[in-house]
Image 1: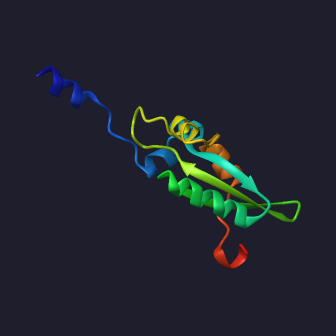
Image 2 (image 1 turned 180 degrees about the horizontal axis):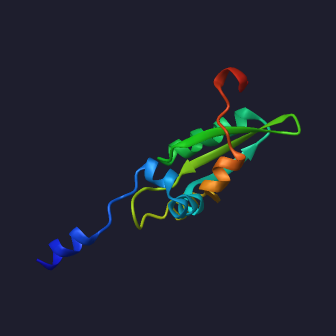
Amino acid sequence: MGLLASAQSTPPALSGDDIESNPEAKANEAQMILAYQVGAFAVRANAERLITELGDHDFIGDLYGKKTEGKALWVVVVAASTIPFENRQQELLDAGFKSIPLRGSDMAATLTAIPEADSR
């Protein structure tokens, strides 16, 4: 009965709409680590090569781009784990990849996906 009581007292998970309307939840989301930056390149082919290497180690790399002073910068990120107690940054390091954690606020402020037509 104690287990059932504790399960009933757990607050429900917040949906996306709840986060948008709750300033505290929105601030917490901005501080959550969403991904790890594994590399940043001026040449897209180098970023794609890193994504292939990550795949060889069972990581899924995503390619983002941003323009800095009129030039493209290709950024490779790996999503943070959604499994509690799993340390994605340590897993990357164990596989030989250094990384930088990106919080929600970092992702929104600095990275945007570049549409395929504009990316080459």
